[in-house]
Image (cartoon, rainbow, N blue to C red):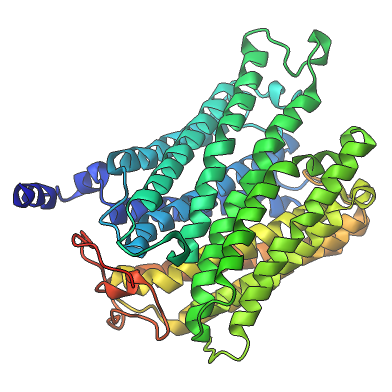
Length: 522
């Protein structure tokens, strides 16, 4: 029987149908990663529209409505179309081969959860061409402003529903794979940290995506079916939406960063040639962050007029998250301490991640202090904070992961010179873009506004130059990827000296079906 199954299983279509009908985790991982790269450039172009407009004071290039559409769409594309699919692609590629399983637990659902995405984003991007323009109420969709969207509104809501559906399906698949498909001998506390962080992320996704779906459906009924959930005139409360949204939104930002912690926890030990310091404390720290992420949501709403007790609670709960995060940073630094370090591109991105993510963490602590937040709220200081944790945080970790596992995926080494060039240009320009935003934010420049007063002109000009530099630097990354697919030095099976884990026992590139006989983990 098994020989029949195998013959049938190996008979996969070629050409375009291979990709459309595939149930193989490596193919689906690759699809996710390519999709994420395309969206990265679409979201990046939106950011460049924003930064071109803000290069000088006064209205320059686009009308304010379109500017607001760009800020809204840029966020939606970057969060749901870049960071989440990229991490899901990494999960698809790596989790089965890290735990020694043959494939993901639910391969058909896996195919569907990817193919929903292109449709969702086609729907979202089509709103740019509709009457009344694309959504322009900010990605947070606060009513009543978001309810003023024109014909694009239902498309926005359904696109979000589909993105959420894709995420939930992906998360269920990850949980089922990790809990059921591990090789004999691989206990939970022997799993690589990337697998752990993804397990915890998947539970977060399953918990909060339905909340977002509920919130946006209430918006939909408010607009078209005469309900008044968020309409004060009908007895509703617009602040309730903010509570529902951020109950999803704050765990969501940890969904975007926890897999990064897993990636960095794989890379730092490899290039330090030491085992990770404090493995179990890393697992517990990740779980603590995930737990705390549910009880901090209202720190986004300090200025809406909450009771003092509420503000105090959310302030202290938010500050508490700094503790497990600090444990993580301490463990990474301790892993590098007295290690035989070498600085290949993945390591550079991982160290860049630690330094700049920590800066983002500190500005987050400043925002957590309620009286201080009254000053910072809705200024560019907030923009600086979350871009420091999302760009040099999530995006750098994704790039580190790609450089780290690319030789394993393609069987070729990338050009180390070009990789390092890409790292240094990205690092310089990302700081040039986002560091000045701290200053204009502290001086009071509001976010999401197409124009600004004269005193902010210099720093905005610097930030815009940085943004264009950062955007163009990413073209090197694309060149490296295409070059690596076709040519380059042949990669060994272990790829990196010091790399440990089941994925390095496979050939480079791995066979189409890995671990048909499960490995035994000692």
